[in-house]
Length: 304
Length: 306
Image 1 (cartoon, each protein chain N blue to C red):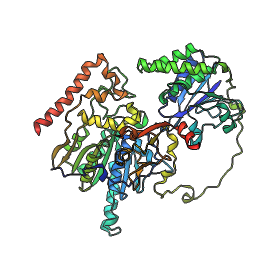
Image 2 (spheres, one colour):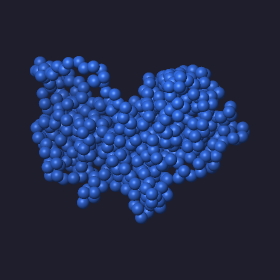
Image 3 (cartoon, rainbow over the protein chains, first blue to last red):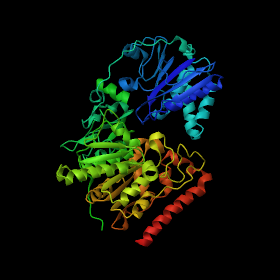
Image 4 (cartoon, one colour):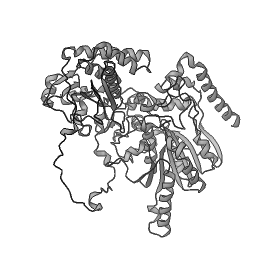
């Protein structure tokens, strides 16, 4: 059985990627489960979707804790512990990372026990097509799938979209497929988990505490400040001080997160720790003083 | 008579009541409206929150609020508000708290709750003359669960449960009119894309007592299908096309606070969102014309009654 897990952010199309891959495997004659994790999916927030596929009936249920293939659509997710991107990765887990950076860099950074592959960023690839790209890249690694099955699954799963969007998705998925053509068959199926082999963990038995001890009481205000929602960002709004006229009201007033503050000199400053990158400020600035810089590029410039 | 509000965005508060780091979608139009309300009401507010997208704000263990927050079931936020108000009134009566410690009770609910299962509790609370402010963030569907159609979904919109070639077959329930029919103290429609109008209405509501509703159109990138950056432009288009009339009910009369001139074709608004994309296809020409007619008739009536 294949156990495949996709990680991305709300809005990148990763839920759809799971469906595309699931449909393609189903059309190839396998039994398939595909589902996104249900939760409070939020645009920009970490999400994951998973696919199980097997020649025999699938009895496993629920989330995939030990994946055979792990697809990461956005390397920034790795900085968010609660997104659990690498959870359950073992020596035989193939990790497919979608990034414009070289594999050597990520091998060193991640020091994974198993194989790491890079799915390069493609020319003309917008963030919302990332799901199609990741589905194409993942399909290339499985012996059961070819480009024809992939294209058919995309056409089926995206049927409700415009012809133009379907064409773009197909083109990008094919390019991703081609980029990894040499890796076909690298992901191998693992035996289904059997309940017979289940060993009870060495449980710790804890004595009951009084409710006042064990139930949390939260009286602190404004604790959300501790959440670094800046990690949700795909693109960073950057203010060009030469173009900013210091009007100070538009970007700051319309920011739905209220993370643009204006200093005494009427200069707006963006709190990048919390800005989610909605880019309303960019769209509202009448002087076009704000540009959107892809987060990877901005982070690289920051380091340089 | 509509009192004059602030004339310039510069006069809006630049200190913000809610903390950053909320778990809501990037570009959330409901959060934008709530920010304005909290900025002007300040910390002395108890938020009574019906289940919906915005309940995630205070999901354990973090909260952006500086004051108290009470989570209720989807149908019962106004009942929760009654309990909080009564509790505060008793404490005030007994002298256990001083008037300076009094709090404003703010119900926060989405359109699913406000126009659907919460309507009965709301109606009863207005009947009892409960002193509360109600902010409904209207994203025109059950946004928190994947944008299924709600009572507030407009005709023609595609939702998770309206996938046909003509979108949602029902009509948007007129919550403004339903509230106004109760003869409450104050009802207003707002949107965060019109911050001065929004601020004036929040302050008008704050200075009144009794049942008061702020009904905010809350553009939703996730549910409506647009790039988050477009949120404010879309809110403004809703006003400019006449689809979201900015108005208020006060002292038994309805007044429009902004009459769009020139009024843009509704097509412009529909073209801005994926949920309406099918309305621009040739086979939906009649439906599009009917939606334009409906809007034209609304404004014609407004003119006739002016």
